[in-house]
Image 1 (cartoon, one colour):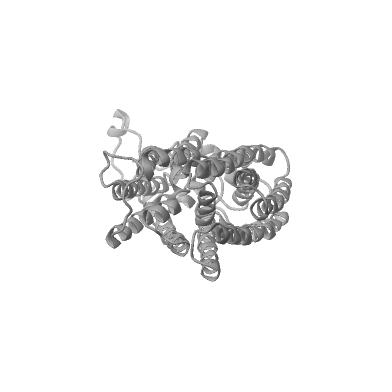
Image 2 (image 1 turned 90 degrees about the vertical axis):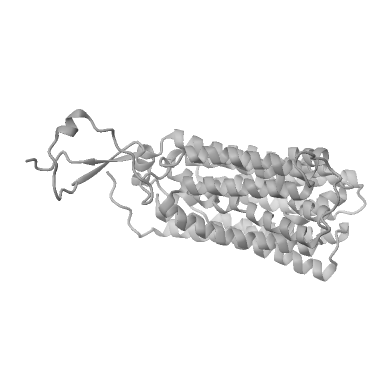
Length: 472
């Protein structure tokens, strides 16, 4: 059995963690300037108000991210992981410059520009797929199974959310300077600034280094984290991510078209959502120490589903009539209610660090790249399923998309409930399952003030071992 992990960490691992934190903050802030409300708004105006074409362009980004992420996972396990990071760096710089040209070049028809932007988004999706797989794999290699990995993952997620706040905040300032409207010129300016900021952080990937396998980490993963648990975690994440992708890309358009939000208001909403997720992730982390990761994730999925159904009701008026063209939300109370419900849907994202830590706890070092690549398929849902989301919005309004997404969150919650007691069976708040008493054990004499000398694990439960204790 492995000895408890020491709190020390070698210099290579510490360097990897520092670079991962810096990249997460810098790249996330740059991406947040253009890839949230600005990108959806730009594509919507460019295509003359077509939700389906917005979904098509962002879906190309997600499909490329999925395909390249899987390839990067295979490469990360077969070759040096730092080599994959270098490929990601080059891809990121080229994709950022390509998107800038696609948006900024003049004397191009709207249809041709849409095609160029779609290709550019696919290239940027390839960059996201490669760096996310390689970085997440090296990040997991540089942490220790259990509380230290969960804490480090939570810290990185917090930086992601801070970046999610900083990006829209910069976009908000830019809109205040150039004009608070959904004009193509204003949207193009903000998008180009954000894309220009995306290239420098990619250079940080060049500093990452490979680290060796942790024998204790692998032993625990082989013993307690069989592939069945990892598969269930991925299934739950895939279902949740696919559903989220149908909605998350259209939230800015929902508030733009249904609640008459300006670009400044839409970016302010993104900032508010990030702040809610920052607080929520801290609550989830602390709660998971007593309730377990699986139970916390299931509760978050259910809360998000309830809020999505509420948003659908606010949009459609009644859930038995789902169609586009409903009257706008002109009432201040209705708009405020829609904002509060949207913020509650962020519960599904607040538990993301717990999901990631649970997955990496149950896969060995040698195949971690492939597992993180498969986990990247769930991120495909954020953009890839936008194709279906755009189709649903044009056919049944935003309410229909909200209802379908709510259904996927409930299904994901059921999968997480099936993992309760298996993901982290030794959590303090969980009652371990014991073997059923046998006839021989019932005939044994009672022992007073006896304490077990060893603890043995078996599967997903803990069994007291009294075999070495004196009898009689």
